[in-house]
Amino acid sequence: MKNMIAKRLALKASDKKGFTLIEVIVVLVILGIMAALIVPALTGYIEKAHQRTVVTEAATYRTSLQAIGTDTVASGGDPTAITTGSSVLPDEYMPVSDEDTPTVTEEINALVGNEALDAADLTGIVFTGTGQLTNFVYTNGTYTATYSDGSYEVAPVTPSN
Image (cartoon, rainbow, N blue to C red; front, side, top):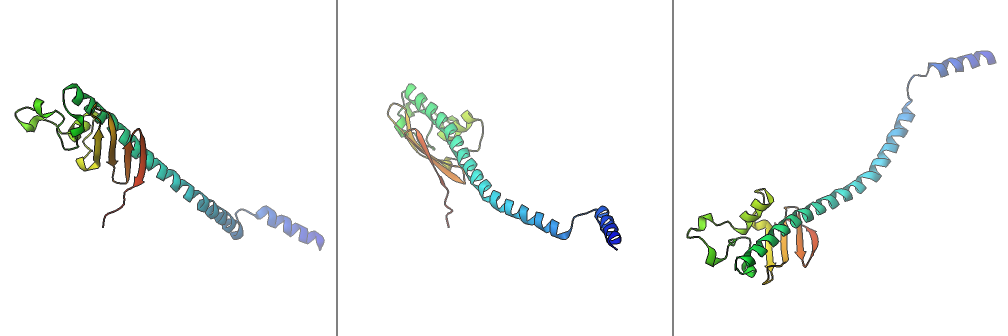
């Protein structure tokens, strides 16, 4: 009798070809716990990546704005009068037709090599009398980067109702 039971157990053990339902459930529970731990961590990395993107874009525009401020001073203009809608050239150097004079926003788009920047995306431009850029605010639709005296602060854009 013992011999017969041992033979049956040996046959059952060698006949096993798949996973039991309990084993599959245990694996799914473990995977669920791992996913619950990983998803919040990844969300934080995604937020930081979006914030770094807006700072990188703002830094690119800062470089272009600084070039415009320097050029304005070099051509005898007043950099403190520069805004996103203003022309790049000072009044005394303006051509007869305003159609050919680019605005600051158009000039930045040309310097950066895209047409994505809108005048509403770049505000609060402040230059010193020597053409040094001190402040501006850039919004990319998701985040706002505020540049002030060499550093950036990032905040999410609040939806307007």
